[in-house]
Length: 628
Picture 1 (cartoon, rainbow, N blue to C red):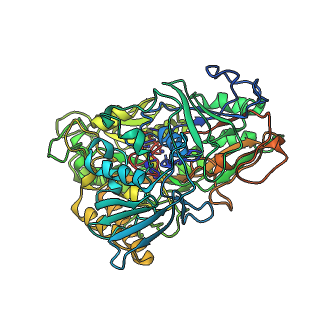
Picture 2 (spheres, rainbow, N blue to C red):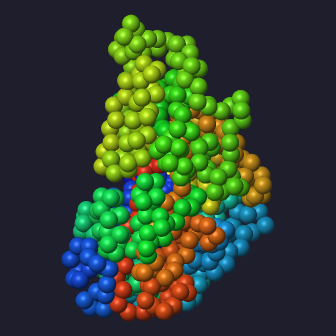
């Protein structure tokens, strides 16, 4: 689905859990993948005044970065949050054991300064840094990490978002304040990419019911990341202040505000007027119109998300319960393949994305060349409407005298197509799909909603535009298609993207998770993508570029990821916003420091989740692969 705005990987889970996160983990997890348009607007004069205004010094001299977001926060509890905007905020509040290098995505120290596996790779020992503190002054210790993981292992609610990371853990201990020991049931290749926010035990052990705790009532919220949560109002704003004790150094901006704001055209207008400093998830038309304008730089970089078409295979729970009302015809592989064969990807790239995308193929975007996969010529479901018609005939869905395909119930075949109301690409793609499938004799009802999470989780859809932002380690976006990701019962959420359960896929997933050899693991990941492609429950239509723009008279510099030709928003970490330097600071270096008196607004756009339709930003689901 597209993490509505995943983890981080991408949990971002549908429009972007991503990613990520970019200032979001994206601030992960999704691109993303796959969520929801993040629009950064101007600064605040008072704590409750979130109206955009000309970028300038705040009344109190604070440097304020304001981000208007086109997605509601689902939770600020790191154990529960799945939407891209939520996990992006949390990525700024809580550190992980490791981070992704901005250059090539390899693991770099976070709360852990080093990590060592045993000879059999079943025991991992992490050294927790001794120079990090919680924002309330308490020392961060290995016991905080151990308590976080043990709680996820034993409390079902605490495993809602990132439970897949600890499913293979046997025991977690902290023999001393700087030593964390994780014992595994079997080898696990993601031990240097555990995209799990570490929380302070002395705060969270007092929480009675983690499943009901919102983490948004007592401010400031104790954290360890570059920013501290200081205020929140549902569907209005999230306010954070710079953490002076952050071990990497405090960010340049004193405050960061996310304001609920879903009009992308208004954000671009604000950029032109200098009321915001950065806009992400631009449409191609918006990006082209901004190109060459004074004091505005457009960044057009390869994206980390995919844009896909997902089918409802029949919503189900682990206990065998079927629910939802997906059209039963979609359980026939021939019908699903016919729909995919009628999609002209070249037209979508040229006319919808106006060349700012690459035609879709496998599940992992080409930006991650180690894992990128393409179907063989014999395997590929290339544009072929005549073959699509033949498959529908073979499946028993023939046309009547009016040219309509007739279902098994004697009624004309018609599907509901779920899409994100705030993403203009969704609407444009939906119109093309309706036309192409109409030529096959199939009716289409576009259902573009502000909230796609509810119908997606309930299984009350037939087809959906899906998308995820993918992390350098693709484990999370692969895990959401396993049988273990299904909800335990009809009333649970689970971590599944769209209710896929295939034992062969599960076997390949388990094998790649246990494979430490990079080359062998990459081959298994490609086999996983091949199996997912052949199952035909989802089909990647495109890999959109990251289209962004910022005002050079307000932002002197910020870090992209990758650093050479990469994107700004939706990264696998917090690098851009932690490193951002105001234009009047006289300092274009990255990281801490500071000048006075600039209020910078940032607008970051949505990636509608991912085969979560990039992206339905439904939920981020458990990692840094953000669903958008």
